[in-house]
Image (cartoon, rainbow, N blue to C red; front, side, top):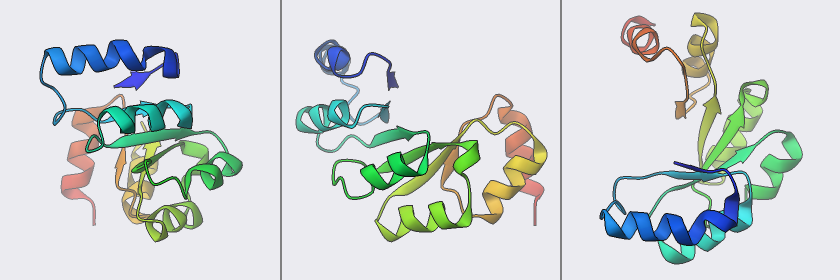
Length: 130
């Protein structure tokens, strides 16, 4: 789930998660690291994904202990950024990969996860590539 309005959504998000007992079923993402910190205080075991658009933002979230996953736009998908994330005990996620070449590149780079608009296509590529 993504918090679009960031920390203003933290309390309503907490109420919904508690109401429907979803603590163990959600990965939460936000652009604002402060929102993720607030959510980590509420749900310390819920994985938090920081959305980043450039190298400066990647570097800013690398050392935040409450960020579990770096979610980067496809332009940031490269060997160096994947390595930086993994060296800092974080998963590297990419959005949004739709072409066969992009998905194969993600597999080659050892990207941990990615968003796509073509799930069946992506699963077929993953099953048959290499």
